[in-house]
Image (tube, rainbow, N blue to C red; front, side, top):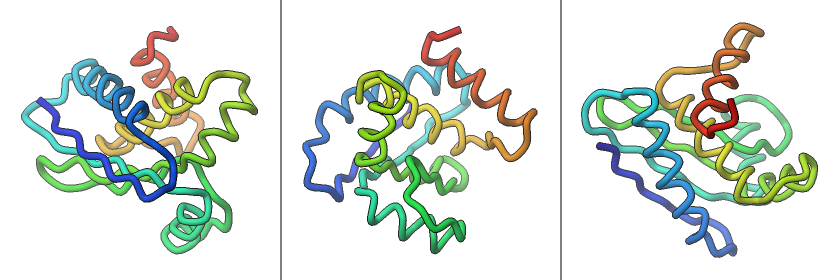
Amino acid sequence: MIEISYFNKTEYETEQFETIGTVITKNAYNYMKVEGDKEISFIFLNNEEIHEMNRNYREKDYPTDVLTFPGEDDYLGDVFISIDKVKEQAIEFNHSIETEMSFMFVHGFLHSIGYDHLNDEEHKTMFDLQDQILGMK
């Protein structure tokens, strides 16, 4: 079983995102056959806050959509999601905010269990898994 915590550091109402996150993350946890009881936290930020984190921790001077800091043992880690960036990307990719947020939850979860996309092979593996979990493949 996975226990999911949410923290909202924005002015936005996040209850609908938390509902989506719970369903998506539990599906991802089951799909990936993660063993044992685990915990994960999702923290909602705005672009300014995630930009600062991206600059401080990754030396990337721009706001990003999701940052994951993996944990240890039964704590999978902290996943920071920019609601502002999710809204921008939903428009850019011509789909709903809920769809884009679903991508962020799965993406952050996959990072928390060790997946990355630093090269073409890793990118294909991770994004194929993301699509499978979301029922797109």
